[in-house]
Each structure stands twice: as structure tokens, then as C-alpha cells.
Amino acid sequence: MTKSTQLFTESKKHIPGGVNSPVRAFTGVYGEPIFIDKADKAYLYDVDGNKYIDFVGSWGPAILGHNHPQVAKAVQESVAHGLSFGAPTALELEMADYLTQHIPNLELVRMVSSGTEATMSAIRLARGYTGRNKIIKFAGCYHGHSDALLVNAGSGALTQGTPSSAGVTPGAAQDTLVAKYNCLASVEALFKANPTEIACIIVEPVAGNMNCVPPVEGFLQGLRALCDQYGALLIFDEVMTGFRVDFAGSQKLFGINADLITLGKIIGGGMPVGAFGGKKEIMQQIAPLGGVYQAGTLSGNPISMTAGLTTLKLLNHESNYKNLEQSTTYLIEGLQVLAHKYGHDFYTTKVGGMFGFFFTKEEVVDLETASRADIEKYKKFHQFMLANGVYFAPSAFESSFMSLAHTKEDLDFVLEVAEKAFANL
Image: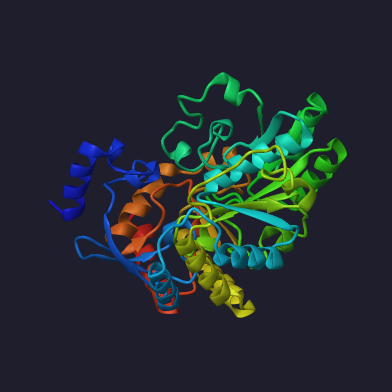
């Protein structure tokens, strides 16, 4: 019995399902979870001493690679000053200043401790600002586990086969309207049926929780136009895409102005973090300035601020995004060629350092087309790759992430293993 198996067996005695986040249980693929001992650069090392080339990257934040020496040093120095104060620090100001400088339309920003808190708070703010109750989200998009957003959710909810969670009351879900991603007609129909009741649209500008699904041309522009027409706010959930697809995020990449933006992942440099912000007139409705309440003891935690600021400053070079793009393109084009060589239907997607692949012959543009891919084939592919030192997401409905630490030698090794996997599927 491996050490990972032993730990998983013991964990199930004390933790529901043996894990603290559902997708980690590997129920979306074959096998049991690996327990990680350490990480460095592009690699994970499990408790049994196995080494893996990692494309999960702690679900996105490890864009520099794991355990970057400058980030680690900065965190160690910050720890010496204390872990948490529950009071303002200069680091919070520095982070807010940095974010508002580099993210379009982010005039005021409030730090929180998770992406779930960020999206939940942004929704509450949109409702408070507009005086409306209903919101629009998209099937397959995941915005955290707050009640109103666990309706036709993606990510682990899809992996577990429960896209709507038990325990979410009809009252909490009744004002959540669900549209089809990349389908403006479905959004317009909801607005026409509720012309004065919709507070906002919340969208992943690049969906990452039904695997990586980019927006089709005109989709995000159409959302902006519909929000303007009906007096609703447009919220870009950039917890995953912020500083990942472009240093200024999806707004710059796609040329769209959002009213509110949520951030996370990379701005914590691997530490727990979240943020939401936007236009001043909207954000001034947040307490203590306005009547929309939001609070958090650990918001703006100094260790998270230190890790995030150090990461962002290291990341802020145009060449980094060119390198991410080149590495991602090299890998997914290589996978595409190999899959076709061995007769497999295979479709790949990418935006910057995010990428995905599906065992299907059709274009993937939404939850419906993503769900028609061959999930069993993905499970077998994942199992083979993991057994041979390559760690992709343990779910067919999660995006993969490239880091600046991945070398061409790493990617060539992945392609060598993938060829064997495709040959044996």
C-alpha cells in the first residue's frame, strides 16, 4: 500500500470524502488522490517520492512555478513581522494601488480571502447598487460555492454529478437565471422576460470550470451591450483569468469594460486571497461608505499580500506572456497531432496560459458540447499520464495551466508520454 493510499484511508475517517475540496478526491478520474509532499518549479513530489510535471498549478496561481525563491524569501521575511492583525497595513494599500494601476475600470478594490467571497460580495453589491434582485449566470460556469451561484455550476459540481447543490433553498436560487455560455440569444431572452429585474450578469470571460472554453467572437461585446440596454451591471469573474490570460486581464485582452471585477489565485501568489472592485460610484456603496455590508477578519492578510505583490512584480514583463503563449501552443498542438495520429477525436482550446483538451470531434463552446466529449477516454488518458509522471487536472471539466517554469524539455517529455497514452487508449 502506498503512503498516499494510507493517508487517504486515514483522511476519510476525519474529513468528508477524505478531502477538503471535492475535485481532489479523484472521483472524476480513475484511481485515488496523490498526497503532495512538496513542489518546486514545474514539479510536484508526492509522499511516495514520485515526481510529476504539474499542469494544475494549485488551480492557477503558480504562474511563476512552485516555490519561486523570491516569493518564498519575501514570505519568510513577512512572517517575522506577524501572521495577521485584523487591522489595516501598508501592504493592503500597496496591493490596492498596484491592482488599480494595472486592471482597467478597477477604481476601488476590496480585499477578501477567497474567490467565493469575492463573487458573493460582488453579486450583493450589484443588487444593492441597482435595487434589483435577479442575476444571470451561465450553465457550466463556477463562481464559488455561495448559495445563489450553485445553480447549474461547473467545476467540482460537474465532476460530482451534482450541478445544483443540496442545501440550497428554492428561495436562494429563485433569482438566479441561467443562460447558455456563448449564446447571446439565451441572454437576451432572459432580459426580455425580466426587463427591469436583473441586477447583473456574472461571467467567466474565459470559462475554466467546464474545462477551458474561450468566448466566441462577439459574445462578451454582446453582454456589454445588453447590460447597457437594460441597466444591469456586467461582472467579470477573473478569479482564474486575472493576470493569467494577460497582465491586465480579460478586459484588455477582449476590449471590454466591466462594471465589477473579481480577482484571486495569482494575486495571492499561492496564499489564500480574493478581491472585488470596479467603478468608484458602485464601490462607494460598500460599508462603511454605503449600505452594502461586507467584512472579513483575514481580508488583506499581510502574508497573502506579500506573496501576491512579489508574484505580480516578477510577472510584469511582456516577454513572460509571450513565453506562456508559446509554451501552451507548443504543447496543445503537439497533443493534437499525436491524438489524430492514433485516430482519436480531439479538440484543444487555449487563451494565454490557460488550455484545455476534449476527446471530441466537435467544437466546444458551452457546457452541452463539453459534456458530449468522451469522459471515459479522458479518465484513461489521465490515469496513464499520472502513472508516468504527468499531472493534469483530475477532472475532464477543469482547465489546465502553463507556468513560466515549464521548460521545452518538460513539454517534450509530456508529448513522449502522451504518444504512448494515445497508442494505448
